[in-house]
Every structure is written in structure tokens, then in C-alpha cells.
Length: 146
Length: 146
DNA sequence: TGTTGTTAGTTACATTTTCAACTAATACGC
DNA sequence: GCGTATTAGTTGAAAATGTAACTAACAACA
Image (cartoon, rainbow over all chains, first blue to last red; front, side, top):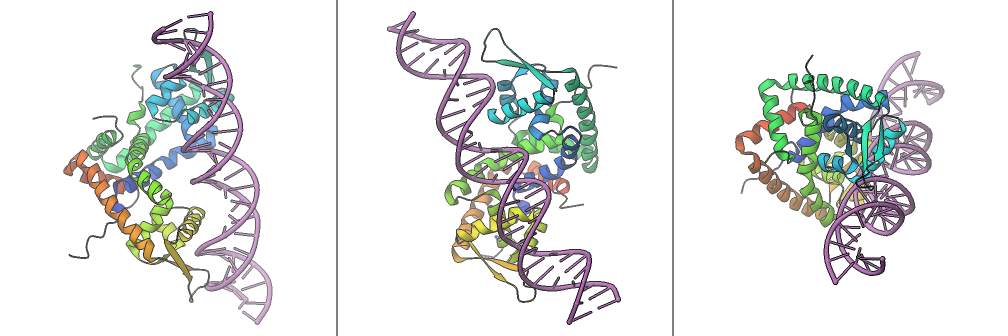
């Protein structure tokens, strides 16, 4: 029995994932926070609305795997900033369809453009092939792919 | 100008990283929380002490990239649980060397064994080659490698 | 229709995190 | 040595998160 069953933190995938996630989101987070006073969940809600069109809070919860209270608060915050608005659905009055306002669209446009650039810069650090493989593996772990 | 400048959330590396990190740490977090009432930072402090031997709070901050207040509180919590103890250093009385108690060592041993197993199970889902490449890329993004 | 169960979303409260200010000890420049 | 600047670590208050209980609307079925 050798002493070398030492297990290093940098070998532990959850640790690595977390460190990488923190490091990678730092720069972008700073931007939407300083520029628009937004929190991460708010940015995500906006992003999802842009991606899938009008949808309900529940839809976003499911899609983004975020708890409903977090979404509820993000929605209120975005509403106060006048980036989104809601309308109760006739078919089921429990549901509220969320949609981007004009200014919300502008903000989202800006954020998306920056997100894209930010993403590219991260990928450049890894190289095309590595980056592709990384994203594939992450999607699997995140349960987005089998 | 085609409409297909749509940028999907699942293409955005920080998003993917975060989702994967959340998903990957869930199972293990549950274990140390339920079994030992520990928070993530506490588990990390323990892990670092096991890995590098006795060290100060500051050392851990630097190594693990965690803010000193978070560490300070984790250290207090671990101390209360009698998993670690501290002794002020003679050479510089601002510094406190942290070390594992007997029971802390037991707990850490258990956690490390489980972490290892947990890690293996994650890696199996990806396949050996993919997993290796994933860890390499994460280390780069985390700034642990150039 | 009335009862029971379920679902979308909000609210209240407890826990955790963040941020800024603080204390105590050391280091530096003179 | 003495004043000033740093540094390690703690603390308190504010912000954010998680958890559970709640309201309002719908569904199902007698």
C-alpha cells in the first residue's frame, strides 16, 4: 500500500468545473452588472426570452433549470428596469407570458453581441478543436445531451 | 444580413460551465451536507488542509481563490465541529496555522474516498479520453495552467 | 355543483454570501 | 524608536439565495 492515494483538488472534476466556471464568467458578469445592474439570473431570463420568444416563468425554470423563486425575483427586477413586461394569458390565468420591451431588446442585443465576443475570446484561449470538445463534454455533464 | 446571428445559451461557454458545474457537484454536495452538515467552502478548506498539510487561512484563500471572509467563517464552522484547530504562529502572531484534528482526519478520509469514487463515476460517463481532455481544458480556463 | 388535488407564481423567513469597516500585529522609512 | 503603511483575520450590515408556506386559478371527478 503506497502512500500515493493522495487525491488532489485539481483532479476533482466538480472543483475544476467550479473554478473554471467562476473564472470564465467573471469578466462578462462584471459587464452586465456594472452597465445594467443585472444579476446573473436576470441576464439568463433575458437571454432565454431572446432565444425562445415570449414564454412563461415556468418555461424558463424548466429550460434553464432554475428555481421558480429565483426566476420570480429576476422577473420582477427586469420588470422594474422596464426590460420586460408580462401579460396574463386568457387560456389559463395562472400563466403570465413574458416578453421583451423595446429597451429590453436593445439591452439584450448589446449583451448578446458582447457575449458572443466574450465566448470567442475564451475559445481562442483553448483552440478551436479543444473548445469544441470542451463544449460537447460540458453539455453531457449538464444533462443537455445524453 | 441573415437572421441567423441567433446566439444560443447552450453555446455560451460560461453558461455551459455553470450548468455542468451545478449538475456535477450536486450529488457530492448532498453527501457532505447531510452527513456532516458542511458547506462547500468547509469541504474545500478540509480538502486543502489534507492536500498541503497545515497552512494558514491566507494560504487557502490564495490557493483556492476564495475570499477571506468566506474562509474565516468556514474555519470557525470547522473549528466548532472539532474537525480542525488552530495555533498562532510564533514567527508572526497575525498568522494562524490550521490543522486537522483526529476526527477531522477521519471525516476527510471518508470524504476523499467518496470524492474519488464520485469523480470516477462522472468520468465514466464521458469516457477516459474525453474526461482527460475535459480536465485539461478546465485547468486552462481556471488559470491553473497557462 | 362541490370537493379534492395540482399547478404558476409570490411571499416570508432562515441561511449564506458579499462588501466595507474594523482590530491586532508586522514592516518600512526615517 | 516612532509614525505610517500593510497584512491576517474578524465582524456587522446589506444583498442574494434557498426553503417552505401561501394564494389564486385550474382540473378531475363524484
